[in-house]
Length: 348
Image (cartoon, rainbow, N blue to C red; front, side, top):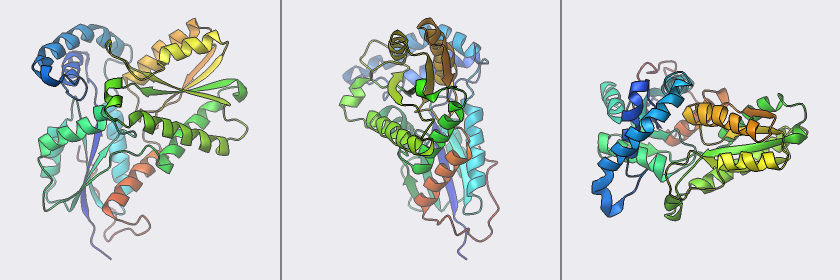
């Protein structure tokens, strides 16, 4: 049998503050990103603008983090995904799996150091945990990786996966999660399925960002599969909206809260919210949807409000990530390499 490949796998995520004291510096890192706030020729104003926004927003944002446990859970949840993926890959490759958070720890420098400490690699896979490509997430993370890691190395084959919005196992993982939530409703015909994605400024969409197209395709595929797998229980009505708008600029429409208000006015009583662009829980799901959204729904007369948990480290989602990696490095899933069983899953 062929020798096992030693493959570095970099899982990119946005990150989140790990304490209330970290909220302001986390926000500072976020708003310093030119892919989040493109200023063009006015780039020299970036630091004072980021400082002003982060200092003003840190107090209300820290209050929200205080209501979900005093920190973002994204690091711990991404670590679980990293470990599960390493375990799933162990029969096929020698996987050195690391996490690179864009705006907090472990950051890109930490990930680069962990890979270097692991020794010589045969291949390197860059795998953003953003199912839908966007300039504000995927492109920003890969730019930061290039700044920290440098140009591709001649001795290491580098593979980049820029999206997986239509991967069959990812779609199945979403549908399975939705299906588990449908059982909480007495009559599926009354449910309005509300897909909520993280918002994006229209300025990026107008520059060609494919994010909204990817989101719409995921929703379409999920509903088609859901209708096949749950023919009598799948909701008859679904909508797509966008959340997490910041600032006065135009963003993708319709907004999450506005959608809840419209449904309430139309007499809708049962809503299942599907956080379509989030693969782990964090403040946008735990607070913006499950606390703020729940309160708004009640105010608008919606009586039964549920939120689907993120796909997290569910077996189907981990299987999707495994498939992406193995395809990228050209290893057949039905042919484990010699010496299968070893893994570098302890590297973080």
